[in-house]
Amino acid sequence: MRRRTAIAVAASATMSLALAGCGVLNVSGNSSSASPTKGDDVTIGLLLPEKANTRYEDFDYPIIKEQVASLTKKQGKVDYANADQDADKQAQQMQQMIDDKVDIILLDAVDSHAIATEVKKAKDAGIPVIAYDRLAEGPIDAYVSFDNELVGEVQGRSLLEALGSDVDTSDKIVMMNGSPTDPNAKQFKAGAMSELNGKVTISESFDTKDWKPENAQANMTAAINKLGKDNIAAVYSANDGMAGGIVKALEDAGVTTLPPITGQDAELAAVQRIVAGEQYMSVYKSYPQEAEAAAQMAVAKVQGHDIQFDALTQDSVDSPTNKDIPAQLVTVTALTKKNIKSTVIADGIYKLSDICTSEYKTKCDAIGLK
Image (cartoon, rainbow, N blue to C red; front, side, top):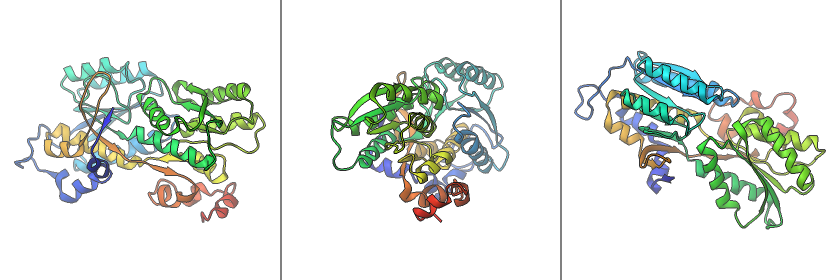
């Protein structure tokens, strides 16, 4: 459950800049507003869940590493491990970090429920744990992620927009939700259903194991076989990787005019599908903003800078095991053909040449992306 004030919604998107501009992030050890427990030689444990989604290796890890170095005069370091979608492997990685006595752990859980035991072990060892991107269970100290229900709401609204003014309950929608072990997937679905309920018919709905595109492709093939390839008005896909699998299933079934398909993460392949008209939209989430906020929270927490930590966590969330967890919820943007230049290109996520390769140049020109 998310709880945030209208002020917090606006503030979370600019909190990092405001803190940096005021110099709060550089509170010194002798400041009356801070009681540091560590100097700059901190070790941040970073546990990321997978490599199939390119964002973790390409954005999250390098940005967090760079930000930690910047905040600690290059004395701090990041101990990084990626579980490659294996919950048991991640538990072992976290235990190793506990044994190594890292100062704090940023945890993006493969399985938010299963990892609760290790979170408790870290707490018992005096190591704070900040849930990153996914809300892990157990006694975590804080949470930083995007506003996940808002992600679903944006996807749902975009799907209705794509269907047009004559949308009605006779329109059959296939819903491709994320992994049942990821609490974010439930929030995405809840947000989407708050927009879609009563306006369209959800004819088929799937929880997609491990978020894998091949599983989404298999699910979509089953939906096509049941409903018929020409009886699907739109497809809700919770992320871009699955959207790729959905497109393959539709094309394999002989569909030449693809229905509107949603996504999330603004992966390069998805942006190119949007340019080509194969995917209607994605949700652009500023990974630099989320990753920088996580690094700032981790350093502030371990150094005992309570004022800046509180300033960074003005939202509040509940997990199945804990209530009123301090949080920062970062806002998101619907990415369509209309705003590619003002989002992923303007923010330096991709260059125009990355998107508009020879294969997509004509399509890019057609939408003024040049």
